[in-house]
Length: 406
Image (cartoon, rainbow, N blue to C red; front, side, top):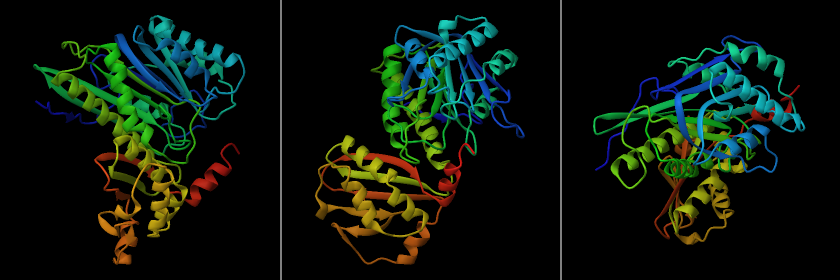
């Protein structure tokens, strides 16, 4: 039996029972109406925790510290996050500052420092302004409806917050999964995304929690691209506090299936919103590859296409140059038969059996001008299926990033 999953109105990371959040403006970022730059997420009780992190060879000390404190035998109560400064490539004291941030937050909340995680996001090579941390972290007031403030506090170049929550019922008990993410540039993740936090009041076995997150990340955050660059601070955390009071979810039953699907829906939504909000972008690009030899092949090919600079610029220029799509699929190096490939732009077929066909060019140009452009490539050699998301590449992206710190 498939348990239905419902959207939670105005859902956010603190929608799950037992979670609270908040934010404050400390002056790390430049002032502006409604701006916040330090966020705090806390659970009333210890949580099982799962995480995925950047695979970059250079990582923030916040990633190093969180890796030590996340695991199947670990418990977590809170996450402290700052924006405006990445605390990366700043020398040995970067780790000392990350640890002190958790100490300040833990003392403020009256919890164990070892159960406190930390994230930073912003400009690389800039030290954390610890004087501001010491002054303003203790001023953060958390509340059950404070998820929106937390979402605001973790933004950098994002144009909007990214939040969601869903719920499902098991034996009369409602379980909620909420989430928040940030990211707009330096997006081509490998095991995570810029920053994302997912919470649930379900009682989840730690090993199953990690397996669930890893599977969801593979199909969501690892399938998005803005500019081909991977952040040094990539972090995705999933916290489960069991506050809903239901039986343990550990795999192999309807509740576990529903939980996995709920986490996947939350992660996919947050990932797509990151791609949609790419720096300077005007169009979300969704690439579907079907009929591959395997799902992994389809995932790889779809991501190559979504991340192709030539595909991105073709979408921006409304240029129906399907040769770029072929090139991008081919550079994934998956096995295929060129003579069997069909290609569609927003369901308008432009390639059949590996060759271009007659179509109304103006219709395709018009389709490329929409808010969402869907590219579908049918390889017709198997049953493998995969999707990826990207965005167009515009002059605004180039101008913005050419003067990022000046």
